[in-house]
Image (tube, rainbow, N blue to C red; front, side):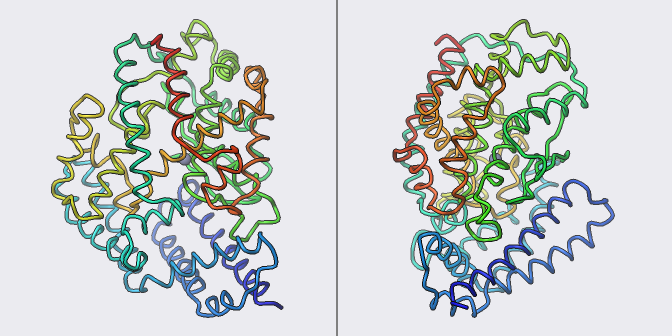
Length: 489
Ligand code: ZN
């Protein structure tokens, strides 16, 4: 067997074990009895130990050196295996263990601090987390930028400086748009109670309408919606809230976007490094275009309005026009995960700027809450009332996830680019969406992006699908046009 074939055979087993670990994580969030938590922690640790040993096995290094890729697909496979091997071997085992241990401790303390609205009690834990992540970044960066090294885990090939330049171009336009919208008259929010069975029925219908294949997927309830798995077993979760069915419907469509990306990847790539979404940003572009550009469009909400009337009867929204306005209601809340399309990226930029300063050492954790509140007031026009609505709202930093936040905004930017090309490619898009027919739209995304998995680098993946280099302009133009029309600006 050639070195390349040996490498791929070895990788196949590692991928299969990683897939089992992922499904065990899914089970923990959906099905696991509460009393099994301790046993589960040990099972997960055992799996992680086996996976870490496989990923750092010196044999991999030898095979990587000897392997001669027969074609472009093989070259891409090797690129992923090499990146993973180098990352795993650059960080000393003692440091990796210290980070893992501190992460599980940090989450508990973060949750308690958030419940008590007490940022001070989180400061020592977060300071230690940042010290550890800086140490990890120094191992990975070998003299380069620390933040870029962390960012590379989630969005290979982009730098903090590039993101900064893009966000600096976006921020003034978004701040201006939100200010103009908030001066205009807003539609009233929904005022009705929607039964859970009905919400789950519409939610399942939405998933199927967007092409989610339930033969190789399933939908369960969980506290936080997520999608999990690749290839022929990709599962999603959703949640319901009696007065806010849109929370259920649009988080379902969002996770369906992630799941359809994984289901849409060429089956020949299953259990290889190419068999998963290429980066967090590209992944988020799929969830966001399904959720927003398609799911919250004027055309598609015509269909959704009819489905909701069938399911719930009269729920107090007079017609399709009003329904579209209610679905796209803009409000300046504190919480990122509840933000509308206009505010969402401003939430991300705030976190990006602060975490970059934390990693480069120009901002101390002790000053973080004050910095957060000042920036929030500048961009959102209101003062943060308590830490659980501000600096303590997201779990990410307690997990040691630095460099993750910007991929959310990058996903929106990529979705804007894809939507521009999709509209040109499918002239009858609106007429189809108004009938609840997404086949041409999701088919275009599968054909031009999803099927390739990790074949190209993230930005090349978008460029290949769109036919132009990704830029923030299509997203900003889309937001201006959409919300300008809704709010009569
Ligand atoms: Zn997402």
